[in-house]
Image (cartoon, helix red, strand yellow):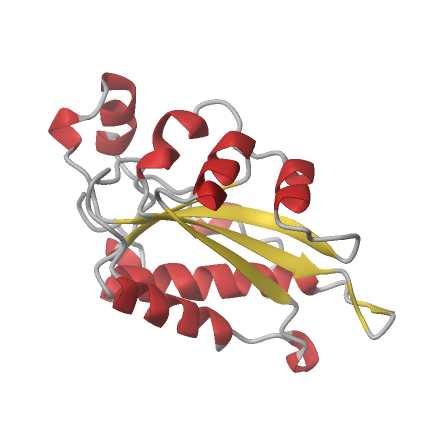
Length: 188
């Protein structure tokens, strides 16, 4: 995949990162790279340093990995099982009885830090919103205070040429983003 065509300079690690759906189904997760990505997530900023995120890390071949795959919806089930690990990023709704309205945002920052460090360490990632949150919560005993925000596939890049055509088409499609002007509500 070629780097993003940006309108302003950004860090190479950001321009080169993309969300693959083609993972090598036989390469085990690089444990050192995974540890570094989790460490980057741990050091993400959070409001009042509440660190509302929790991570459920499930390596391919484990019952937990299979539980996450089973909770994925639609197209995600067709490719995500090949990832070396699946990670659930969950957010705490409250701390010491006080609501944390920013918890999902902060957990998203942890996921973003994870993806950047993972890419810098040679791993590939893809975040998913299409999953059964209730099934994930039940599988991992989240209770009422913890809610899954995203599931991330992480692992070694697979062989695009060997992938099914539907995956290959998505993988090789041009990378696009709307212009920044369309995202700006105010630019005073």
